[in-house]
Image 1: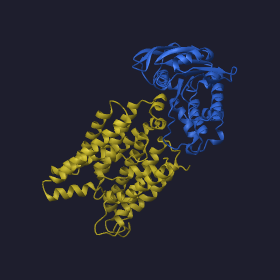
Image 2 (image 1 turned 90 degrees about the vertical axis):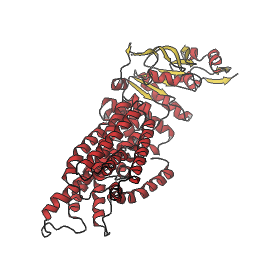
Image 3 (image 1 turned 45 degrees about the vertical axis):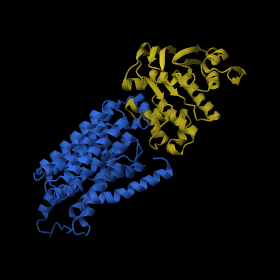
Image 4 (image 1 turned 60 degrees about the vertical axis):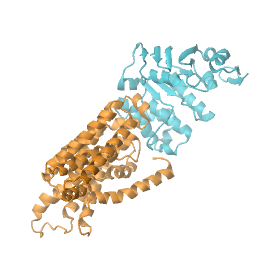
Length: 318
Length: 240
């Protein structure tokens, strides 16, 4: 077993300078005109945002897989990310998206609405099955409403804006988004970390977890709020960035003792690293327009998901 | 410190069960399918709130949350382990109610169950017997005053059943209360210090194994004519 936290911290510290310099045009701090402005106002906030978004999604994925005791769980399945996306789509629909603040605020409101609905439906029984079904219902409803909004978009420009935004990206983001997402994501990761011992106990099933003193209701509240904050903040500033929460815990798990609690912080760091590197790759690929981050991660994530399924079938254990 | 059920009633499963269990020995709960054995065990563990009646630990109402978890260890029948933990990591889950890593207690629990050499092995690589011992090590690591185990011997072959019972008897002799739900009446007869027979949610017989599992009780509760062969400690049940 290696030490994943120092490992991923070191890799992030190595990747950040690379991310500051990488782009269609590689930046030379000494010769590129306005290098300081480009670094301070464009690339540094973008790198920070990649770290924040990836950390939130990685931690939420690890916690969700621990809670559902299922390695195929992804925070996107449980309604919060689609809820946030629906909020953002509403801001486009009503023409508020031009404001740097209103779009993420709408998205956060959507995430908050989905979180509240999830808590309202699943919170009474504190059972995993109802939680999963409620989350899937919210995700389906939000997805249907987004499709409705797209099909009834007031004009072709709004429709195009919505579709492009939904693909997820960190392009043209600044410090405003960092200031919005960072505190929410950190608070969410802290809540998820508090859920760690309860998730460890759940490894043995719900009755054994309760016999170990775990309160299922408290655990579910920590999960719902922690995921709401991390995923909601991530979608609010970057759009839908899928598969990070699914992939990262799998890459990290062999480096830990496999207890869900020991996976949350390393998954946050590995998620940060993955999104940071993926965003660099999106920038340097020689395409006509920059590849959207959400598309790039889905292109990697979907085959990974298939590989995971095949491996599970072969080993009948995960 | 005794563990006592007072008029426990749970709809359609328990009907006014009263019993006082003493530590320092193995108490077996026996009965046909649907008799309420697992429900009683979960009530005693504080996992199912009774509709009426109460569970007393040392004469006081059962505590809640972590305090209860520190004093009563519960081993469910399913034996579920969602992730491929190492044996040591699995045993360390027993320390959750204490909020510490309890390295000494985990090492002691592994040693007591002869698992020290397997401490680093992933659960997926263990045999059924080793896995059952690892699950019990998790409970022992919490050093509870009572161990309540639901069919811990199911799915084990005879050698592993006897080995696990020997470990449990050692634990009981050191002053811990051990309550086992057992289907195998011969194991209960030969290894329990006390037997509680449940039928349709009620206590039908209680006492020493010879009293509680007498041929007349077996005929009344299990509707099977049977007789015991052999001497104390090595009895076998024969039909007819």
